[in-house]
Length: 413
Image (cartoon, rainbow, N blue to C red; front, side):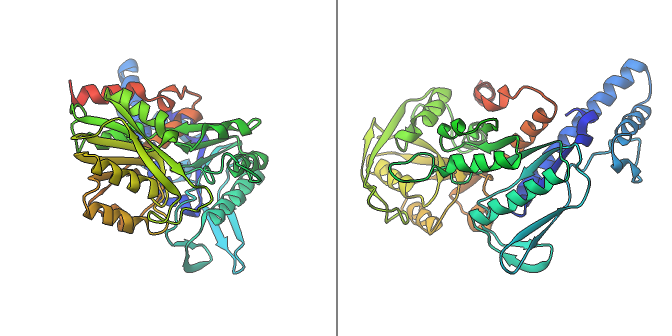
């Protein structure tokens, strides 16, 4: 990260996005320190000056542009900016929300982080009572924060949504709403310039905006990194299985990256029925196109809700002779009694491990499960924020095939 422009970058955490924001900022600070130390060494060698003198000059240059320079600090070492913009959130007894931004953001590139699927208890500035917020409440917190930022004169506003809300409502079969597109249109109307999200459910959502930009990141590298810790990625018995037709492209990417065969599960649904949980769902039948007998199965999906599709697929593949089943999801929601049903499926030996990401915040109820592995994607978001802020190319982050090949060659030369 270029240390010169760090004073024009600000990050606000909505109540639901506090934990993910702290992880992003931690990565940004590490990146800033590395950049500072590298620049210090290069300048000290080039101008034959001591590193301490160069450090003072770099810090002086930063302090000229930032109010943080008024604080007493050791000027002969790296002075890391805070990046985080303080904000106070109030929840009124009738359920309304208000935010006050506590420092100047005029002219800054502002990034607002919100985890709309964080259902852990949250506290607000005006009360010690903890509240569990639903998706709609989280989204309204985000809207009032955006408006406060616009009113306070932010140079630009980018929304960071690890989970894009209502993303499964991207197409209609009758008199239904296209809420996935409408969410982006609302944010665009409020003045948002860009949305950063992870593995959005459908690319159709891209087409619903006029000027709003959407950067869709992929957790494939982080997932494969975790997979490489539990199996040999070059195992000749490894096969990738798409859990349904909608996941074929995603699993085709993994299969081609790993150089392994691709199979597919085809399922038929009865849309007159509503999926309640893993046992009461609308899947009528499921068939496998391919063979998994004696194989290690790796199965990837973008989102896990009740877990009905995944658990039913696991049971079918196990009954068809799969030796070991590992699944991965970018957005692990675990709605309803999903945890209980995955516990039961694990106890019965239907799968070995499930890899998820921290795009959705969970507590030890899930994180301590023997069958669950969490992949950290916060560094991915930190890197794209840094690149956007400094007008650098995003190609390496949006298309990570090259870094995946480096991973495979490093683990298996």
